[in-house]
Structure formats: C-alpha cells, structure tokens
Image (cartoon, rainbow, N blue to C red; front, side):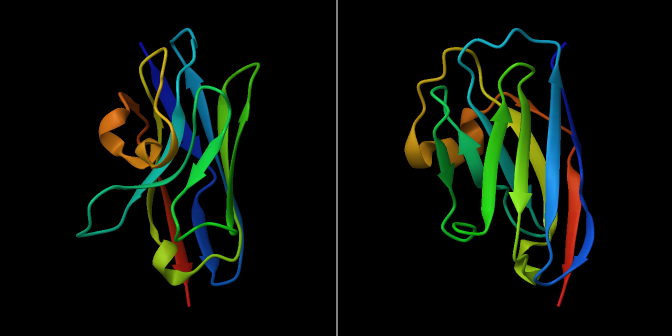
Length: 128
C-alpha cells in the first residue's frame, strides 16, 4: 500500500521560511515523478513544484526563485524548501507520486491529474 506522509508545515510570518518533507513507503520506485501541490480554501488544487523521472524540477511561476524542490534518491523522500513566504502561499500542501515509468515533463508536471498517490497534507499558514 502506497503511503505518503508530509511534515514540516506550520505558521510563519511573511518573509519567513519552512521546509516540507514527504516520506514515501509501500511502493517500489521505478522512474516515478514526484511533486508538491497546494489547495487554499475555495480554490482548486494547483501544482507548486515537481521533479520528473530524470530529476529535473519544474516550478509554478508564483514560487520561482523562492521555493526549491529536491529528492533524496536512496529513500525517495521529497522536500520543499520555501523561502520568502507570502500570505498568498497559505494553503494545505500535498505530496504526490505518479505511476511508474513517468514520461511527464515541464508544465505538465504541475497538473494534479497526472499523479496517482497522495498524502494527507500539511498546513502552511503565512501571516502578513
């Protein structure tokens, strides 16, 4: 059973930083894509940052230069370093993994429909 467990969320003032972690288990990694998504109240889930099967990252325009996605290969833990946080970054953040042999590249990595497995989410609240 695939399990994704996010941690690292919390409350921070604007300009601050947080680092989210996503520990994965229950599946055999085989060229999967991995990503971070977020959903604010009343809004649709949107892609934040993701890594394709070759390890290349893609970012939403709203977070470029502020957020960094990374993966530890040996255990496929996914991280999201968030700097210079803004009030509009407030949302529930979700980790997601695609099916195996992921061929998704570029902006398509930010489409939630391309991911199969999801964590429960970690709340990030940024006060201005």
